[in-house]
Image (cartoon, rainbow, N blue to C red; front, side, top):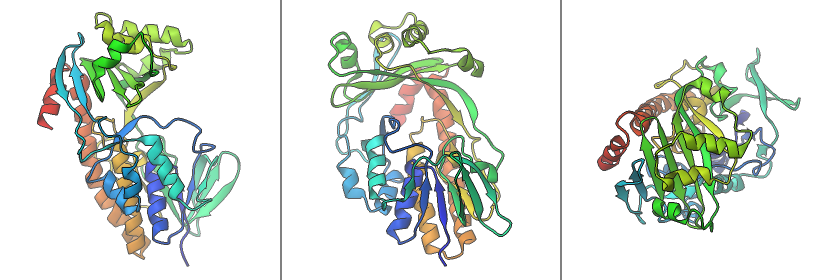
Length: 373
């Protein structure tokens, strides 16, 4: 009898896992708290790595479709100082081994590849507990419940599945992101948009930065980055967007107006996104019938570009183990051994790069990092 598989979370990792399982004739159900695929925007561009993310796309049988999503020319990088002086300028590489794609479009590709009914929208996990007779009971916020033999937490930073395996919780990194954006066609910011180049602009200094990406249609999305104590987040109120943007702009007093315009002229509500991370090298003992993928397993800062790539790779790797190995515990053990190794290395690089971007040697430290790449 085939065991029932519950995947908690319809992010890139959970979707890849579900798709690869289905491609091999193994059924799984994905439970997602959001009401639909369009409940919220999915963030900006991702560079999909040849050795991880692209491996997962191929395992899912979606590589040709993936190529239609690639955004050529948007992988250019420019580093400037607080005055807007260009310190590093890397042009776009049309043949890049790490092509850029829109996260939302990639997620939609995976969703559309699944059999109808695979995703149970509006099912936010409230609790999960082990059954004496084996397997798990999952209870959802709206009151329903289900049972599964195998539970896979793909439910992100604040995973409700993770406590079955480890008491570890994400820790604040000391850096906060605040979203900024400029609509295409705005005349008042034309010079600032031109200063980005054709891809991503990184204006950094010790403890702070402005990061902006220019899309092919002309609009700009990005982040303000600030190193702040955790209590700053609870004392900061962006309820009045205009006042919030002015407050953010004050953090960049003395910076070039070309750069601060990304803050003062932003046309989205400033949304605070503190950067949390799980302990580097996190491991856990084997617990029967349950494991994690993606941020639930190895949440890290975005400064190694590995989060989405590893999530997809985790999903594809776990699916292959479950397909190839009839003994579930042998399959999960083999998966976790590989998971711990690759995620520990990526988390170390991510933590190191976060310090490089906003540490005392910025922006020269960022130039050095890219020069070595």
